[in-house]
Image: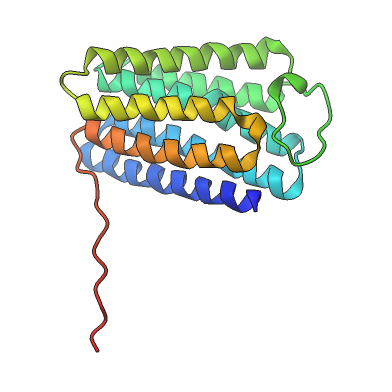
Length: 219
């Protein structure tokens, strides 16, 4: 059941990432492109949760989970906010950091074996330097960028910024309660992805899609 919940959250985040990618191409928006990458990383992290819950955690599942959820999601979120604020240097910097993150996730040695389906704690399997140190610094800077840009432009985009801040807080809370299990973490992933998606659209002036009414079949 937990694996299904994590997989459902991954599909939801992936759907939102795809929607943002399409809008980024239509509007030629680098901010939406970076935010799409952030939600894609979030989806991959949730997919790794499903993988670990269904088949048990191993080296590959943990590396994917740590790369997408621990190293990429929040920093790419910050890159999107900086690009929205007109900081063009954030794009190349984000690409360079993503390459570094992939290299770390692939090459860093794991210090202990895995057992069971519970979400593994990073400190039990990774030395602090370099993987955990990079994650702490990158997540802190990414979150700081989101908060700073949102506060600075709050009067111009109150709804979008409020939703982005709320979604960031929900995502952070989801990471904090990872010890409660896959089901609780998956619920936070789904809710954070939904709120962030709405915030990204509102912040860039894009209309938020509404559900289409269900038409009855002719009798």
